[in-house]
Image (cartoon, rainbow, N blue to C red; front, side):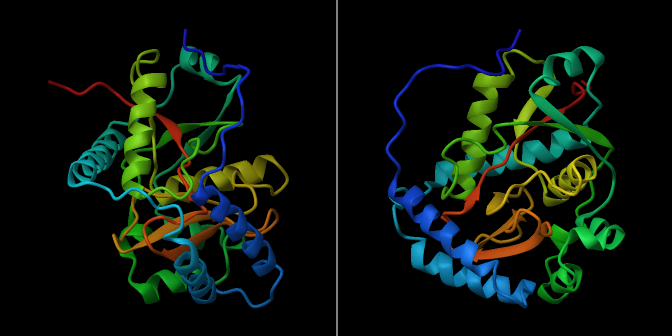
Length: 271
C-alpha cells in the first residue's frame, strides 16, 4: 500500500535566494491587498512590477532544450490522460480519503464558471479575459466529468515556487513516477488547467463557509498557460478574497508562483 505521509527528523533546508525573494514578494502583496480599487489590469501591472524586480534573483538555471521538450511531452500527455479521466473506485477512495480531499470537476470552462458564480471571482475577470484575448485559458473545457484528489497539507510541490513552468512540469512528473505510479495503477500526480482549480476552489468554499482551497498569497502554475513570455497563475491574494483567475506576471521565474498538484484517475488506453 502506498505510504501517503511520512514523518522523519531532518534539518530544515537553507532558503534559496529565490525563496527569500518570494518572502519579500508576499509581504508586498500583503500591503497590496489592503489597497482599494483592485482590478485585473491593475493587478497585472503590480505583478509585472514585482516580477521585474525579483525575476533574476536566485535564477541560476536556464531551461535546456531537452528539458523544454520533456515538459511539452509531459503537458501533452496530461491532456491525453484527461480525455480518459474516470471516477475513483471505492478502494481508491478508501486509500486516499484519510489524507486527500476529493473534488468533482464538471464540464465547464473557466469562463463559464466565472459567469455561473461571479461572486467567487473578481467582478471583471471575465471581461478582462475577453480584452486580453486569452481564449485558451478562458475556453478550455474538461473533456469528461471527473474527480481530482488534492492532498490536505501538501497542496504545492515542495520548493516549486520561483521555478519555471518547464521545471515545475518535469518535477511533478518525476514525483508522480517515484511516489504515486508504482503504488496506484491508473492514477497520476499532475499540474492542471485553470478551470480544474477554479472548480476545486469553489467546492472547497461551499464546504467550508466560504474559505476556498487556496490560502492567502498563494498562486499556482496552470497547464493551459497561454504564453511563453509571461506567467499566468490562479490563486488567492486575500484569505477571504475572491479566487483570482487572471493573474499575469512578467518573466519565467516568478517567486510567488508554485506548482499545486492533484491526483487524476484515468482509464487504461485501448489497444
